[in-house]
Each structure stands twice: as structure tokens, then as C-alpha cells.
Length: 420
Image (cartoon, rainbow, N blue to C red; front, side, top):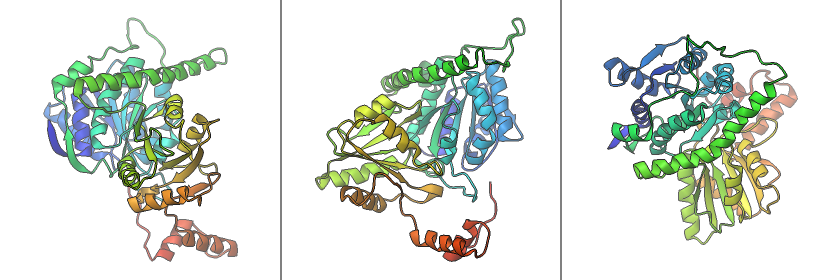
């Protein structure tokens, strides 16, 4: 059924259709509308039977999900930014225990300075926590990925994180095709846990494991992620057959066949990139886009295959490793090792800065014109004058304190108060 609906409400509806038995969540912008909607659905009986747990923090939310999942319930939560970091210890516990929890991550920047807008620094900070990470390009795909995520999590008994850009998607109202309950029930079987606490057959959850078996446990976590490289495209294919839509999978190529230049990206920026590529194609430029739908596990073979003929690969990403460089870019370099393509790392959209068609056109013009060094990390639309003024101030020892405050003064902007 097609509806004009906010992204958060569409996701809440999709989660409802998946019939979770336990939801534990703590509100934090920009995911709050999702869990508010789900709490209303539980209260009114639209989502039943389901236990909605009021918890004191994000750490409490994930801890409650771990307990509920270990007890055999289909379990769901949502968070964002600092909330994800507050969960960090429990995230590793959930994956280490092989619990099929599904979580929505409404991607948002990590402070300091405080910023409530979108980038991917939260998900990237937890990229090696053992959770599968799926990225939505649109609200339609966010809906579809949640239905697939529950099936994926329960097939492999692993936790799955569905990432959708905060505000850009969560608060955008657009037309979404919401599936019917009968369709989801046919696609997503009733939950049969692979492990379940049983008082008549007690086991220890979270047992101490010494050197004699710790590496083997970690290896099995890795083996499940590797198995997901086969399972993700199979589930996406089953979804396409059942719902008539192509969503998810490992990668999403767009006009990459024979392209001399390919732009690689994740999330909602892919729509803008496709528009830019269409315009450049009309002008005779050989260029395409490769969307990464599944970042963990990393689909190295699929990325390498898609980029095999490219001469230039431009990675546009909304996060980076401070002191090192691009995160997605480094994964792309690993996947394309030995190929002829130059790989350009470009950080864009940090803290919600718009990634516009004009900016992308200027970037690609610089790449095609040989004015960008593939050995350096580049920042799209960086205000170099503002940075240089602050560096000079630091060298002179003036006005000690946080850089953010100084630069806001230079811009004539008053620092906003803390907001979570």
C-alpha cells in the first residue's frame, strides 16, 4: 500500500509488521519518532503480543535486548550517535553471543563539538563490533531492509544494524510502498531461536573463555559474517520475488559497466550522485556510481568486480579515521589492490553539511582534470581560510580553548547549547 509518510513512521510500521516480541529503546534525536511510534502501537494493541521496555539509557536498552533475545524473543531497538557509543560494551556482547537483535541506527555525527545532524561517524566507530551493517539509500529501502534484516539476523543468529541517514531520511516525508501483514508473514517465518535459555537445561550466558578457545569463538563470529556475504544477496533476491522490488543486496551498481570513473558511496547521497552521473553521461563523460548496501561484512569480491574496468574510483564518505584517512576508501583500496584504478578519498557531508550537485560536479571536474591527488585525503567544501585562521591563532598561542568556539566567532555565529 502506497502512503505519503515520514521515514521514521514508515520504519515503525515495517518493524510492527515483523512482529517483535520485545522492544527496548531510549530516545535520542533523530531516531525518537521511531520508538515513540512503536510505543504507541504496543499501547494500543496494534503490535501485540509485545513487551515495550522503558529503560534508563541506551546501555540499558541494549542490555535488555540481550536478555530478551537470549530468552527467545524476537527483539528490536533503535538509537543514534552518542547513544550507539553508550551501547558499545553491550554491542560487542550481543555479537559475541550470536544474538539476532535488529537495530535501526539513525546516523548522526559524534561530538565534540555537539552536532545533531547527519553523518556516518557513529556507525563507522562501531564497524568492527561484529554487527552486520546495512545502509539505506531511501525511505523505501529503509522499510525493505528492516524486513530483510530480521530474516538475515535469525537465519545466521547474528545482530543486524540498519543504517538510515538521520533527518535526511528519518524526517523526510515521501511516498513509500508499505507491505501488507500477510506479505511479511509469508517472507519472515515465526521466530525459532537457535539458542534459548531453558530453566530445565541451564547454560551460562557470557561465560569466561580463556586462551584455549577465545580465538576459536572470534573465528566463528567472523565465519558468520562471511556466510552473510552469500545470505544477504539470497534474501534480497527472495524479497524481490515476494514484493516485486529490488532492495538491499551487497552492492548497487548504477551505470558502472564500462565506466572509466566510478563514484563509491553509502546512504542517501546516492540519489544525488545518480542525478549528477546522468547529467555527466549526457555530456559524454564515462562515469557511474557504486552504492554499498552492505558495509559489514565487506563485499570485497563484488566491489572488485564492479570496479575492475575503472581508471578512477572516487570514494565519497560521511566519516573518516582521524589521523589515518578514509574508512570506506581504505576498504575500497584493499578490494582493488593490483588493479590500475587510482582511488580518491573524499570526506563529505560531515555534521550535516549538504552534499550538493554543484559540489559534486566541481569535485568530479577536479578529478577528471587531474587536479586532485589520489595520495591525499580530501574534504569536500572545506573552508580552508577558516581553518588557516585557527591554525595561525594556535601557532601564536592566542585564545586557548576549543577550536569550535573560536571558529564560530570568526563566522559570527553563537555557539548553541547542548542538545541530545
